[in-house]
Image (cartoon, rainbow, N blue to C red; front, top):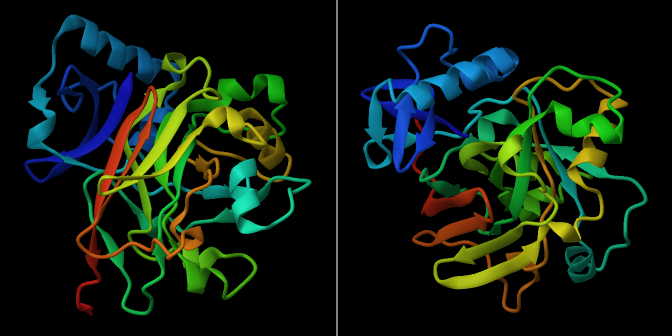
Length: 289
């Protein structure tokens, strides 16, 4: 299934995407209205959504009539790994890490498909990073690698937008990775059963019509299951937590001349089996207190 969080007629809820339409689940009492609650409800909620689709019941809304939010608009944790593709490590001149190297993105940076990325007033060094992301489906700790797939609810696309000069203000990189609108996710969450091998997917990033990144998730140094096993040794992972799996070569900061994002451009990321995440770039609006 393709699970989606969307807004229609001033109401935000979840549903499933089928043939260009959204099956609106708001009329089904056994299906929670928010994605984190839906994931926490487990197999019962998934079965109810599948039944709703199979019956052909429920309101169907054209995708073109809704505003698409991030699948998980406010994840409890948003963790992202750095230096996870050999070609990206090579373009940065860094050494291959011995352990997975994670940083956090604050949940207030998250936006959905179609929402504008804002180039901040304080920097013109705004960059893209096309990535596969996955979402945790159940509370877990100390998950072995061979069981990790069982705790992943599904997969989505992430753009780890980065303000490069602010990223270097501290070793954690957190502030430069967490500016408002610097966390596009979407357009939906593809359940794990529809992607039997997340480690063999084409991933491409365009800025306008220019192809900037072209890779395959098979090139990751640490795969999704190894990330779950590693992180869950340290912390409890919970439904709705987002983990982004790193970016391949082709980021703007390493282009000559630099390929930083400018207002008026559009970033489009496509991952095989998931879809396309697209976001325009605008200048940060005037502050409203």
